Length: 500
Image (tube, rainbow, N blue to C red; front, side):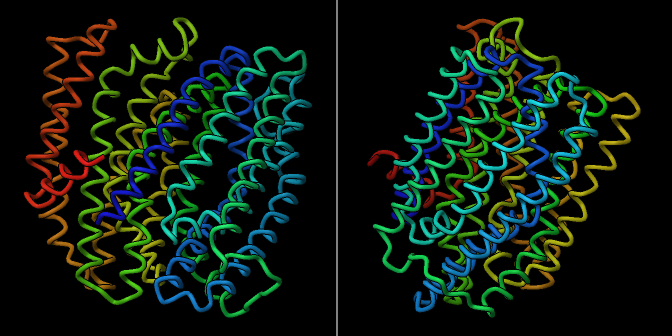
């Protein structure tokens, strides 16, 4: 538990660095590029992300196999790692081929982009592909860092990443070149530098994590089998999110894409509050499962779900009610794309709903048998695309795609529990009583109190906003600490906070 707390602290440090950099750069980039140019970048980047459906599944597979092997003693770790790197190199080549064929065709003939900017969009596509390849090749190295629970590396390297993104924002503001092209070029360079930093750290810190020309066919088959089924689940999230972005581009145009991108940036930053904790607990769940410690594994899953939701609640609740005022301050009054606040509020609720199931997915992945789980979840999540299409075609506002996502993510929770109960005898009833009801009560108390507080302290001025946010955080902390946590958990986390 102490190692978990230490890892969580380092991951929060990383999160705060990248969050601060993201808040500054988003405003500077929006002013430098304008909503339409930023929307073009969003649409092109979303298109490239669609080509990573299978690679996203392999990312999960690589993390699971490296951590599982380390949990069993690590005798074949070098073989698993080297095979993982080769797999990512092959997939990177496949992504480049798709980008240069299907991607270019779609940018020229399928996207809603002003005619005079199609050439620039095609160049942006190349640099986005470079960024993606750098991220793909980094996956085995990042997985090794997580497996060894060296989360301090993420904190240190995030300083490089945050500084790079800040430099990018200010350079494009004064650039005499085409700002959209220059922006995508600089982001690609930052991705490459971060990739090199992770590689150097792993090479110096972990003797077993060295790439050699070793390719194990059996490991490869197991990875692809695992990834193939994971594709049905994780790939569906990518398809739903970026498919929705493309539908927004088709029905509402690039300005709505800019609003979507800004909300996704906020969503991603907030999600890191919970993700920092779940990243720390994932290797412990996987290693515990590998060692057949059933009760410890279940305890980690239960605790992880509740703490993930509670950590997010500390951020989601104050931001939800202050979103209007803070967005105008962040982007500048008059610069906020239409619908951005509604996008952000629905995105925040969606993150909170997803956080319930973070550790359930980790439990399923640790087992290695993910077919039923991923097919069930993936089938539900893919309903986003047809429902989004119907709603947008009927004239619904662009932000309605997040309302659909929220509904389907809530629907996934009982579906996940049903599959895990049938396949692994997972105590779904106990999870419902000890986790879901507990989380629902805490969320209800927090949001209800914060909503009532808006009648007394409307967050429409700096004084009102700051007071309302502080009061909301206090309400959430008290609800989580005295209603959500068990007495022994409360004593432990209070001790960790006081020590740090």
